[in-house]
Structure formats: structure tokens, C-alpha cells
Length: 279
Length: 291
Image (cartoon, rainbow over all chains, first blue to last red; front, side, top):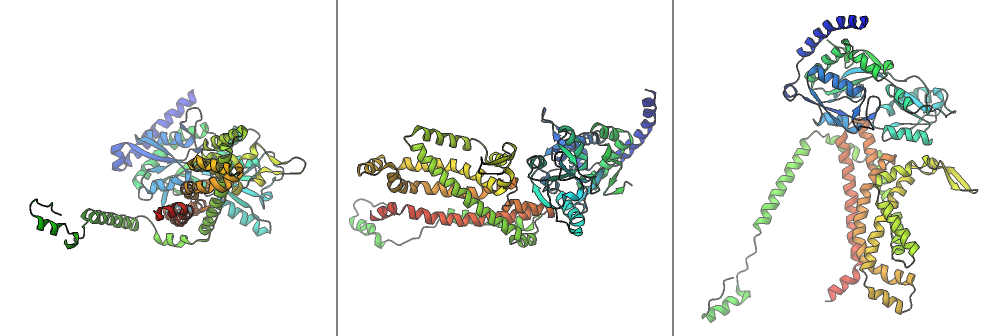
């Protein structure tokens, strides 16, 4: 009790100070007047975002984080749940103001978009617990490895295979491009593919939901950050959200959400904009 | 033409002689105006596309890209194969439906009910994931194989699209058979033809005239329905276009490339359908000319 009180006493002045900073970074006029921010999301990726089977509501770390940010900024979020491949077009056509959907901040995407980085991530190999043929990562050479074809994982698999398999004279990984993440897991179960790739932050949830079904082959083999994505022209909106995210980092909300969704291994030390520290 | 005034006979005769009237070509002002408006709208649309956020050089570059052409080939292949399977199954089911045998009739009704009753994308996913129910398939003692090795994206798409198409085709063929006059069945019977012979020689050839137009329609539909197989990794046109724009983010450009090729395919099919329709209706057309 006492420690919580002490923490609160420390947190309160910081909270007051950072809220002042956040308020200083004004929202764009159209959002300041409408009080609504439209967020594109692809709800098929627990624990980041998915539909609760019981209520059909969007749940997940991203959803909680988005709502916490909206509270700081005094706006309401309008979540638009669609296909992963539609996330980027939805910003370009003006259908959404930002994307908060476990999307990686990648150099190719940064040509068109800005990112507020908020989580560490990496591509990670997964196989069935019952698969005895794949023990070490090098066992993957020449095997069939599947992932969602609209993500950046296919390119990750190819470069890993080039470095670790082909360069050492081993057969290359046979990449299988699947339509959506749940179908990747179906293919694993049927033995259509020998292993799969998904983001490290989503694997604990998958393993908890399917006890003894899957086994991690190795640590994440790429290091990326996940970011809230904005059009390059939306610097005002980006900076307002970056300020709000800094508030959530300093007032303990971010850590509380990380713990709620058991993402300790993926927690970021501080928010960044396009990989750079906030001004 | 002025109405004739009574009592002025000479004038009347003159006026009624059509050959002597000046020939005035009708001016369809409405047509001219509406065509002009449509052309103007079309020009505005073309201008909007030209000025929009579309990199036309990318469209041109990918129009004949290897992956796109391979997808085009796979689309044509799947449409042909699924339509052939659908045609065979559809004719068999329609004949079974009209059969005096109650078991055949019930089986045909069940088949159409099952495959018309579920969305084709659901059927595709079921076929593709069949290994969850039957991990191994085969003939006991003779041959067996892992289901996933047999149920390739091609076979799963062929079964999903072909069986579904067969259910629809059976209804079209049935409509064609109903359209043939009952007297034709009786006539065939009276000259001693068996049921099978009368179907083959008398009924089905006459039913073709009614069957071909909706079947051509179904074929055109099939060209585009093959795109659903993109969810089960069949590398058809849309699947390959998607894979390219997932990598280079040129979404609209690649969609326009795919749209172009679908339109080419459907145009070719429409022309083929017209030729085929003339051929199967030549008896009726000859009669019409003789009159």
C-alpha cells in the first residue's frame, strides 16, 4: 500500500508535466473539432488485436493502448477492422487517420509512412511440438516454411535462408505463402508446412491457447519495432500521439498494459519516431 | 405527312403517292445529345484515371510480367478444368434427376442441395483442409497417400469449383430438357429408341439451344470465380497480382493489370459464345429464314 502511494506521489507531478507537453502538441484542426480519430486495424493477430469470440469486440494490447492514448488526447477512436493488406491503402485513400495493428516499422514502408515505435518484435520460427525432424534452426533448410503472404515475413524467410542455408551449400527453405494467420496454423497441423513464421510478440498467446501443440525453433531472427503508422503529411497528428504515448510510458499505463497482455519480452524502453528519440 | 382534306381528289392522289414525297432523313436529336453526354462523361473519367494516384508506367510494366502471365495461364486452366468437370457432373445430375429411378433422383437432388447450399469459398477451404478429417486417403490394401500430398491447391480448387459448378449446371441442363416438347419423348419412344438413345439423339441436341446461353454466362462467371482460389494458394491471376503488390505496395496498379486481363478473357469468351449459340440454334434459324 505504502509503496503504491509513494509511486503515485512520484507519478503525479510527472503526469501533470507530461500532460502539459501532450496538450502543447495540438491535434490537427479537423480532429480537434470532430474529436474522432479513425484507426485501421486487422483483428486476426492475438494478443495484439483480435475479436473476442464471446462478444465479437476487438480486444488486445493495441486496442487497449489506442484507447489509453485517445483518453489522454480527449478524442474518440473509430476502429475500422479490415484485411492486413488494406491497412496501407486505407491511409492513402483517407479512409483512416492512422494504423494501430501490430505493423512493423520497416525501411520500405518508411518511404511512404511515419511510425511511432512502441514495441519490439522479431520474426520467429515455430513448428509442431510433435515434429522431431526440426530440432535446430538449420534443420529448416530444404523444408517447407509458411507465413502470411501480405506481411514482411516472406522477405525475412528468404534472406535468412540465403544466409544460413544457400550460402552454406544447404538446400534453400521452400517458402509457402498463406492467406491469413489462422490458415497458417491449419497448414502446420496438417503437415502441409513443416514450420511457420510469425511475430515473437504473438507466440506466447498462441502457445497458451494451444497447450503442447507448438514449439519455438529459435529466438527471433530479425529485430524490428512495431509502430503506429501515419501518412508522412500527418506530422501534427503523429506528434500529438507521440506526446500522448510518452505520457503513457511515464505514468505507468504502458507497463500495466504490457503486463496485462504478458508482452514483457517485447516491451520497448521508450517511444520513438521512425527509430529516433522524441525531441 | 399531312392528312388528306376531303373533296380535293387530285391533290389527294398526288399527296398519297409516297414516291413523290421529299425524303427527309429522321434526325434523332435525343440520340445525338445522349451520345455526346456519355462521351463527355467517359472523357472526364479517363482524365480522372490519368491524373489520379496511379503510376501508369508500373501498369504497363506489369501487364506482360512473367508472374502475371503465369497467373493468367493458371486462371484459364482452372476455368476450363472446373467448367469441364461441372459440365460432366451437371449433365449426369440432370439426367439422374429426370430418371424414373428414385435412388438416382434422390442422389441428384441431394447433390444440388449440398453444393448450392454453401458458399464456394467455404467449400474451397474445406477441400484444402481435408487432411484434418482424413490425414491419409487411399484404397485399403492397394494404395494410400498423405492427404496433403494429394490435395494440392490445384486439386482442391478444381474439386471446390467443379463440384459447385456441376450443381448449378444440373439445373441449367434440367431446364433445357424440360423445354423440349413432350411429344419429342413420345415420338422417340414410338420409333423404338431406348431412353438413353432418345436422350442422346433427340432430347439433348434440342435442349442445347436453351442450355448454351446460360452456360456461356456461367463460364464467364467461372473465369472470375477462380480468383477465390487465391485463399488456398492457387497461383491464379489475382493471387499473383496480390503477391506483387504486397511486396511493392502498388495496389491499384496491379489491380488494373488483373482487371485488364480478366476483361480480355471475358471478351474472347463472349465472342466464342455468340458463335456457339448460332451453331446450336441453326435449325431454328433456318426455319425462321424459310418463313
